[in-house]
Length: 164
Image (cartoon, rainbow, N blue to C red; front, side):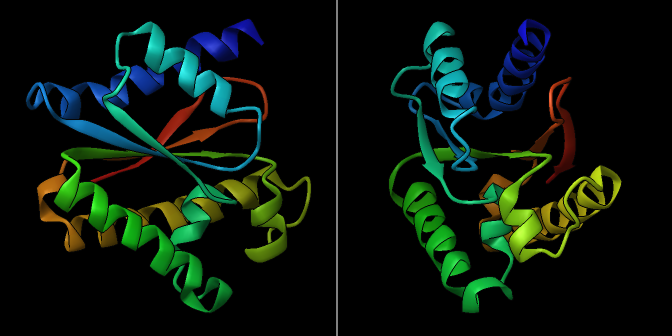
């Protein structure tokens, strides 16, 4: 678990570095799954690195899954994009980091990924993530180059799976 925490910390810090460096008032929006393994790690990392007050944290089931327009009659998608509009237009958000994880119940229930098929789940995360990154950057061009989706494996090093 300690290796996962070190890898997660370094990947998160790398993902937020550029948008937070844009100016002293810039912030990032962190979108994570509601899985409670991650909020504490996120908060501990951001606070330990002196980023208190420089980020917003939104948790939605499946993280990037919330951006799937066809899921849930588009309600989760609208909710996510309403939050993004506020964050970008009114709250100095210069970047978005989406934190997905494998073995995600939302991807099993709503994206049709069989439980235990990590390869199929990874492919579906990548499809959803790439589509979402393109849509975010298209909708909010000021975020170009500062949108990342991280995929946390079950218990190993996270990977960046999409950027925009």
